[in-house]
Image 1 (cartoon, rainbow, N blue to C red):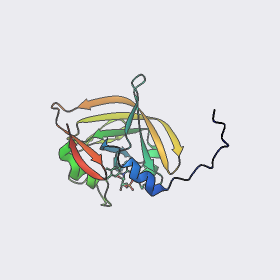
Image 2: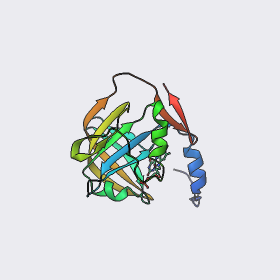
Image 3: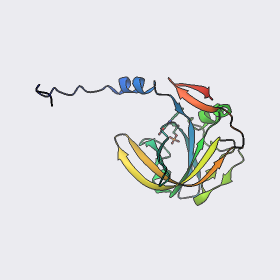
Length: 168
Ligand SMILES: Cc1cc2nc3c(=O)[nH]c(=O)nc-3n(C[C@H](O)[C@H](O)[C@H](O)COP(=O)(O)O)c2cc1C
């Protein structure tokens, strides 16, 4: 234990934290669900991560200001699509303000009526296991109930320092 008196904790500026976190390279996913009226909902997400193999748990977090929040707060299922490097345009589309992000796509229906997008490297269909309020985000923990994987191992879509990159 330090003999020194405790020092005041310096507040971390949000921009400084954002800048530091941008050094952390991630993959890119699109997470989808449907709202109480059956409308398709989805957004681009890079906060996705593994939690546990037994039981099979994953997590991601959603901004409390997200228009999709209500749907994810009520739905019992969501699907995580791990994007391939040729899906950058899709990642931009699901982060943009357009009205119908699903327009013109060949959508399949998964567990709980959740929309499934084509072309992902892997798709994890999850039952919502836990929601945890944490600062300006809600952490969603999903119990993976079904997995689909692409037949070929093409490069993944990555995100680093606010730019997309192919990985692998
Ligand atoms: C690469 C990338 C990663 C993102 N990751 C997240 C994330 O983890 N959580 C989140 O809430 N928004 C994330 N966003 C922002 C949302 O995709 C974006 O704000 C979207 O417009 C939200 O849609 P909505 O307001 O219709 O829910 C990310 C955007 C990009 C481009």
